[in-house]
Length: 603
Image (spheres, rainbow, N blue to C red):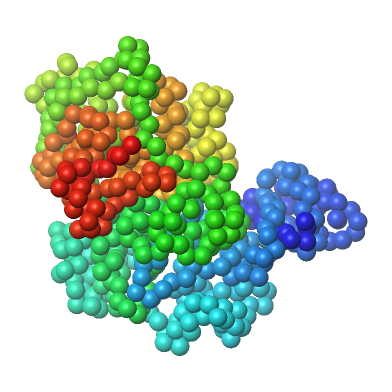
């Protein structure tokens, strides 16, 4: 067996502190005891060095390390020859590359920390692949010989000889604030190489922002500006890293159309996207990435869009006969427990009256509604239609107009805001201890929330050092850990990757059912919204001016109403029931619009 497996040893350089431990890994290693230098730690070294050739994979050092800094992973031998890049000894390793094709959009799907950004940088020519030889990196001649006979060979030859130009939209758009000098209009004018600035500003809805500075706009506006800026450049390779963060559903689809409009017969468009319904709408074919985050990543061969996303959700790659995740993820729309068990009696019903609220020029009218406990209500609407305002009205942050205060029941509310920029210096453990001391040690909460969200691994890290997705997981934990009647979650999917989104949805759903509480969720990721929703509140009107919030209604009628405003239709995938957007004016699209069923539930 060991002949067919190759071993990689990963040492986490943030966690490994040889000066603070007794070098348990070295003392307990059976290979070191025979006199071979399998693990080397000198007084001068910053981290331990593990030799992958000598390691026998016993895993004793993994157990003994007090900081949990070591991972030993067995990989199939045939992956060894596919190594594309390795950062350093005992560091991250990427196998194979996604294959871009001219005139088509390539979508990449996979969890965070599994090499998508590394692969993008290699394809964009920013990193030179070292084929795993970080000590003596090969020259281009050798690299091209490695890719001989594959589509990638012709791609890299073009990249080198024709000096292909890349335009890349980075994952974190906040960095633009530091770089962009002057108003957004002047920045776009300077970047406009295609002479399409006015069309692009119309398409991405940027006209009213052109006089503002980058520091004065919201995340969604900055995202739209970043997409427009990349699209205005003349380039041969366009790369978009998570273009749908912060955008609402309408803007996501608009951005997808703009990105598709870039295609010419000889250029390449590559997109990394975690909102699977948008990825589905946007790409022509898909490469999945699997592996172990921060340890190694493997890119699959290209699949058609439908098959690629289903492979990712099923966790099984049929072409390689390989399972990379224990459970598959399906999207059966669940009945609310009241409907399935017929026990309507035991559920408390809560009502709220007709309300209205004026904030500056913006007016929000809320129609009266009711909800029960153990229920998740998803709010659907574009950005700027007052979803957060309604959440804060329920939380009692404003007094209502016309003095209708008496009818409004008092609720204890736990609220997770949209942005979660924590400037605190403390560690995650201290923060949880401060805020939700009782909950985070409770075994039920541990198994329902902490374990699936993988909070345990973040415990000793400082809050301000966490990435966006890690912060989001901590924020969801803090929100659910606070005892309350109503939990209000504003965009729980932002910054999470596709797998964590589905995990987070399961966590929220299970928690609400177990604790018999109510949750109001604002969500733009369609898959997550359909998975979570028992009832739906639709917002309509003119964003930022005057909007109306409807009463809570059932999932299918609410989705139908919402989608009819957006003029999109959905069908369901027969294998795992995930919602899929119909291409505009396709047969299915026209059929469903005629029938008036925009959201298709054919159970």
